[in-house]
Image (tube, rainbow, N blue to C red; front, side, top):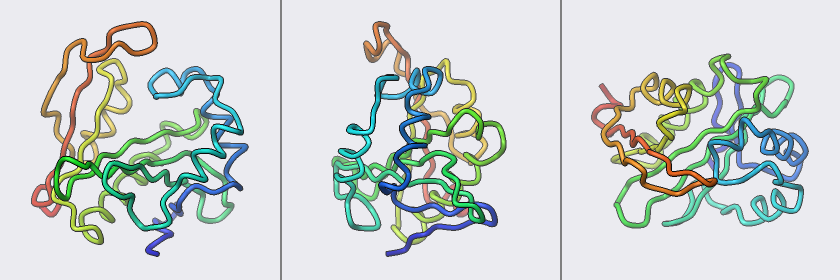
Length: 181
């Protein structure tokens, strides 16, 4: 197992039962849930189901997700999580997502975590391409994705009816040669 992935202030590991209380608390925050595939009714049972379904490997199997907890390297405090999805229809391609508790946003934690996960995917996993999708109204995540070197390469207008409204998604990507440069 290659975990933890570390930076000077972060330890990134698969999500565990010890993370449940904090994980559920930020998933119940309406401002966080607005952009995500869950709603503020997310609860301990939902978290237990997700944690119990986690793969026991460094990376998820094709078509599956792995949820990685972002902890403070010194205190163990859970800041948020990064998700890795192994795409089943594209070789050596991964999708990432990021969620932070509101108190941990705008502190550079997401940038640091995503950069470390990208490094892991391009070096240890030999990824060819990493993608991310972002609601066009989520300016903070768009700025983050561009800031870590991803480029906006698509815009899908009214692509999904999500939470009672049509949303437009921007697609971001980075290739291994772009990451290496």
